[in-house]
Length: 295
Image: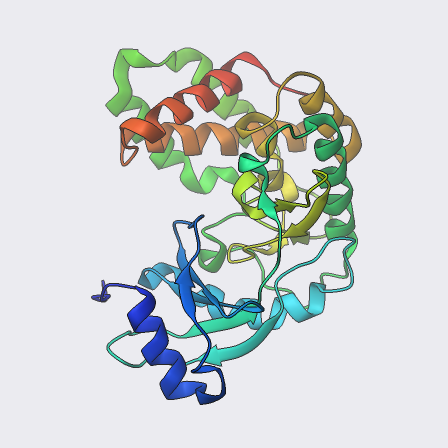
């Protein structure tokens, strides 16, 4: 069932904060420049941020992150968001929402002159650390993670439907070979922590281009870490892609599943909701996936 969501703007945020966190009501509210798909984010003063789910499907992440983020904080060499308040539905807004400490930095996709080879090595190091965090009791991959961390075959029907819709505009035979390789193996070791959306918009760098924060853990959980490798095709290329592959220390089967994850996402976006601007980006990713197995 789809819940009607009002316009999520600074006026709504001011009303929610004033009614539920009056101590922060005097602080100015302003929308951040870089917005994700799942949530809308607003600055609250200089040190806080308000984060509101944009639809029903993103609601489970709110309370999950309230538990997960404090657990992961300090176990990684980079910062993660720090929850400081959990809001309730109100003022016409139907979902729980959160207040976090603001993290300074520039999203990697907007960082001018980024040394992508060094960046790839830094991201790899954080992903190795994340896999090493004790996972007992962590949220097993499932609907809350949009199946990130599960086996990519959960999206087999979507891949077939996308290929049918795209027809001759993609090389179906190559796509099917990549998908068959992705689904031929499974993670056969104990479940480990995964982030679920290691994208350049969720990686913050400092003024020197060094990785300083990993944000948006809404699709995190414990399971197969293959989904965390898609950065190889979505953002990295050449020596940077090679550095990422070498430093992340995962086997060829895991990389094959990762390639399947990248293939799935680019296909469904091209077959469905990609707008004109996004379409070129998804076409670029698909071309990268088809051309380069990485492992």
